[in-house]
Length: 436
Image (tube, rainbow, N blue to C red; front, side, top):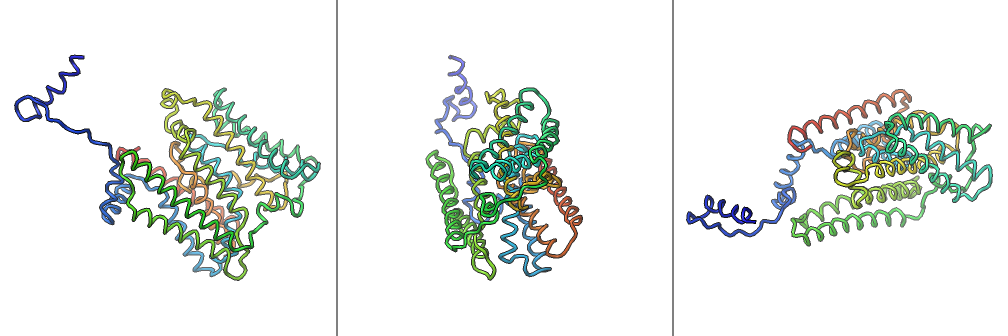
């Protein structure tokens, strides 16, 4: 006790006014320099931007620049690239694989990999088709069972990885092979089971909201939700006596989001040939919002990032690492099966080969291209949306130009390699800057 009381006196003798008395000083509240610098106006924002770039914190900047370049290049080659039908096709074809990519984002944040998503998607589609089409089970119930089947397969992967200690790569590779066999067995002698007209699964990608109010209403809801989240965050920081974003920044951010949302709504609604808002896009966005909330606003999400950053440190902090790992792989399986139903809807039914081919590579590529790190501990759920839009935009543009599929594969592979290179360089820069 006496040592603790003597310590400030010794400091005061050196730093005080010469008579040995310590100067009284009020405690200085912790501040966020990233928010303080923004109070300087445009100069502050530029300072913050250059600081992030020098430190390797690129965020979504590369993929946004890539999307702009893709749009300019393909629109210059074909004026229909940014047409209503083209935008709608990109949105619909991004939905199924994008939902699967959301699950992969969580797995990559853990620093692991799931090679079974394609075959789990195939099993989910097969379970639905056999139950609903072949055996006449209620369509909604069949969809629910199919999704739960994917959840069960994912939990099984997580159990062998977390509890038994088998590497995730090996477990999910075994799952890729095993569930592909289960998919073929479930389909039986049928090469494919067609999707009935008007069924729930057919409507996943075939239904459009023709009423213009749907697209504009969704755009307005998205803008209000975004503005509300910014205001809520500012109120929480203000209550904690922390610097908040200036009102001008909140207005600017909300304005940019509003322009983007209403521009997409206009393209989907107004031009000749526009079919309206696709149901697939609504469901994809719903999954993204829910997953983003889980990742950023819940204890579970913070634990996932902690385990991905350092499993041992997370374990010493009291986190049940095994439970987190099992749950994440279960989530990946659930979303894989749900995404498989979208793929079945697009292809006209469940087949023995659904989920095969380049499905796995496209799903992983979408997460990585969107900005999720392959090294764990870093990523955003919206990476799945950005990455899948990049991939589908490239494929849509090349299809409109009449390019062969092998050219599409080579270009997509080059984009994936570029994304991984950027991620690696970014991490190396952050380590050099002391931010990793």
